[in-house]
Amino acid sequence: MTDQFVKNQTVEVDITGMSHQGFGVGRVGDFVVFIEEALPGERIKGKLVSIKKDYAYAIIQEIIKESPDRRAPFCPVFGLCGGCSLQHMSYESQLRNKTQRVDDCMKRIGGFENVPVLPCIGMEDPFDYRNKVQLVVSGSGLGKKRNNRGLSAGFYARRTHQVVYTERCRIQPEIADQIKDTVLLYMKSNNISVYDETKHKGLVRHIMIRKSVNTDDIMVAIVATENNRSFMKGLTDILVSNFPDIKTVVLNLNDKVTNVILGDECIHYYGDGTIEEKINDLTFRISVLSFFQVNTVQMKVLYDKVKEFAALTGDETVWDLYCGAGTIGLYLAHQAKKVIGIEAVPEAVENARENALINKIDNAEFIVGKAEDKIEELVQKAKDHIPDLVIVDPPRKGCHQRLLDALCELKAPKLIYVSCNPSTLARDLQHLTQHGQYEIQKVQPVDMFPWTEHVECIVGIRRTDS
Ligand SMILES: C[S@@+](CC[C@H](N)C(=O)[O-])C[C@H]1O[C@@H](n2cnc3c(N)ncnc32)[C@H](O)[C@@H]1O
Image (cartoon, rainbow, N blue to C red; front, side, top):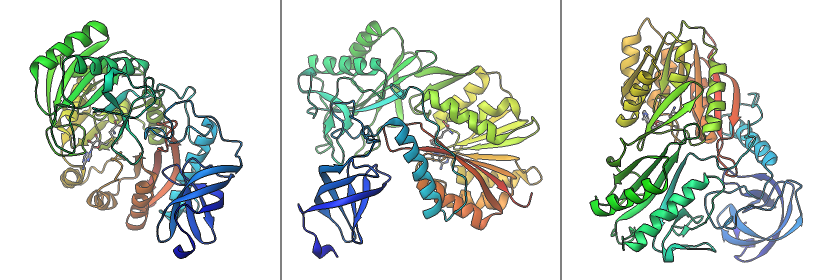
């Protein structure tokens, strides 16, 4: 089949679906073609740019029939920057598309033909929503308008390690762009070197900014290979005097040859390394290394759905696995008898314990460790005290196999699975339903990441023999 096609060949394709990366998908005969920025319902004339055994990638040459869902992207670096992938779609059609993709995963990967997938819950105002921004710092950069005399900070261009600079990124708060430019100008004026990943030389790797929505607190973390005290002191003074909402400035040390952004060690140059965010009447303290949902507005929507699915009465024991700074468990604690959280990052557990204290919650306990290890200990201890509800909220790769096995053995009457990756979610749900007496009640997608292909889901699961 591949022989029929050559690079640069023009093909006409009817787009029938969308891939997880946000590419339009169609077929030429049996051959699958992925076309960047093509939408379902469109007929596209495309140029083949990469041909594999069973599929190919193409770029749009002409839109022969246009989808009514198409809209003009609002960002000048859309298509170049790897941050957003769906700006060419209306927001309503993004939500429909996310619901559809979750449904596809349930059917195709999970083998669930009849699981109800509810419509994805979107944002009223889907802009400026990120409370955390992590920007790669580079000595050069792409993007039409590049200031700071050559220095750049932004997301990587798609499929490259070239940084794209943009003056104003509409998925993050405006003040984050101002802080980014202040850091770059200070670096330039003081001849501070940029980390070069090919030579493993240079100082500054990333700028991380967190801004709370309901308190306005700001955290700035500079990720660097060394603790250059005069640079950090000078920069901290400039930042704190220009941006009064900055509550903490931190140096995060990372001298490893790695793609992982943050190192393990943080040195505080201003404040105590934490900021606070409020959701309803709860206050959460967050540090550089702890996970916190990136969209505060939708975090409340997500957690309210978890609360609704949990339907607690006050008598229940709840296990919150992969609990980060304890946020889900603490959100439910007033309606439960006891909450036990497990989390691998010690700083996040410290935050979780502190968060319990700040909020005067005394029925929550947090354990440091890997969920797959600690659950086995908890199961041993629990014996006659099986939890009434177990919540899991793992990273993109999904739950560890040993954790899934332990859940199947545990016989908890109710599970809630919160996931940011519908593919691994569907895989894990298949395991739980095939190896444990579980059935899926419903799947609720929530849009935590407008204009990107990502989608979050909450799944209500119940034991059939309880
Ligand atoms: C998607 S976050 C969820 C955090 C939290 N539930 C929330 O809503 O903010 C996943 C968390 O799992 C933690 N994690 C990763 N692998 C883990 C493991 N094997 N055991 C326990 N926690 C883990 C990460 O540090 C992160 O805090």
